[in-house]
Structure formats: C-alpha cells, structure tokens
Length: 287
Image (tube, rainbow, N blue to C red; front, side, top):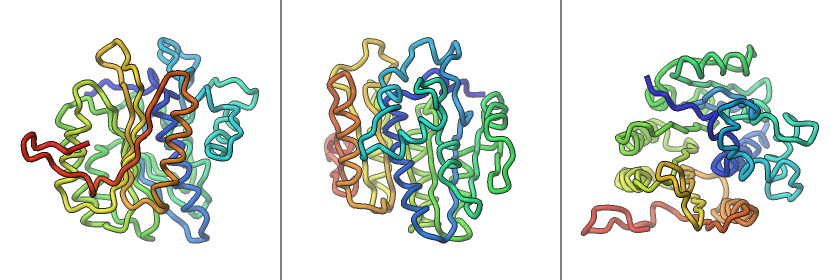
C-alpha cells in the first residue's frame, strides 16, 4: 500500500495554486442554475489539522495558505473567504482540501464523489466529510474511477485528479488514463495537479499527454527561483486544465498573483500544451 499522506504538505504554495484555480472553476459551474457533479479521484483526508505533528514538521503552510488567509485582493477573494470560514479567529489552524472546498461551493442539487484508496486517509475523509445526501465517499482506485465514472449523467461538472506520484510510472500512466476519460467525455473539464521535482517526471506527463488526441489543454506552472536544498522537495507546481471555461489570461493573472506574494522569488508561466512541439532529438516536449 502506498504511504503518501498530504498532511505533511497541507496548505503549501502548490495547494494555494491548485485550490485557487479549483475554486474559480467551481464558482463558474455554480453560476448557472443547472446542477453539476465533481469527481475527486484522490481526495485525501478532506480537512487537515495544521497543529498536528506531521503538518508542523516543516510548516509548509507558512509559505502558502498562511500568506493568503487575510488577503482581500479580488484575484483570490473566493479562495481566501473559504480559508477564513474554516479559521474564523484569523489564525490558520486547519486547511480544507479539494473535497472540502468543493463541498463548500456546491448546492444540494450538485453531487460530489470522493475517491481515496489509502485506508488511513479514507477513515479521516469519512470523519471530515460526514454524511450528506449529495456526497459519496468510495475507497477505490482513483485512476480506475477517472475512466469508469465519466461522463456524468448531467454532462456538467469537473474531474479533479491529484495523485501522489509515488510510483514513477504514474506520470505516463496518468496521460493514458486522461486520454481514455477524454475520449468518453471530450467536453468535460478536468483539473490535474503535478509536482515539479528534480527528476523531471512532470515532463514525462506533459510529453505523453501532448502525444494523445486530447485538445484544449491549458497549463499553469509556478516555479521557485531557488530550488530547495533537499532533492526530494518540489521546486515548482503545475496545473493542467482540460477544456478551461475562460481564456488563458484568467489563469495567468491568478498564477502571477500567487507568485508575486510568495516571500521567495517565483516565476509563473501559462501556456497551451497543444501549441508545444516535441523535440525530435530528445523525444520530449519543448518547454
């Protein structure tokens, strides 16, 4: 059984980027009266106690969500409002994950399906999410659910994919699963997160996805100017949006804003994956 637990990294700068975009997608879906569905394929535990030993070990939230809890700029106002709802005293003590953020912005007519394979994380997810008529929690393989559970009955909704990438082959495998899901639901919106590590696994993911038939793929990347000294730590975070409901400028503004607020020098880059070429010599995408 895989051992990754997000509690060690909850609320870091990558979470801010991922969840700020997620919130914007959910607000867009909720702007229309018709109901929608969200499928979170790797939901984690839903709500993260930042006072826990695990979260306190590196306090990654200090350089992430902690910077935006009381941020009043309109760029991240909806995201920050959710943080304040869970931390009403003005101090960041808990961090809502993607499943919890989704539920906060969903109506009774909308449906949330959360998948989590890790036994311990699934128990925590059950505790955090409780029971609700429009929420379903399943302890299953998230990649299998990605393919099997689309398209949604109402043809409106969002698929959130945030795996651990503990197994190196997951980078290429994910592109394969995405292509299968997209073939079943080419109009669907998909949000995928990936880490940027020294091993450059994300280039495998982007290259493999570029080689598929999937279209309208927008990428947002947030990179730190000085990579962490520890080799295993991230130097950047990436978001893939398939069929974004708004022009790239919306995502670029958001990504640039987050980069500008970090206490370390950071770079933001937003581009269409469809426009990137494959280097004939290396066989990898040109970035």
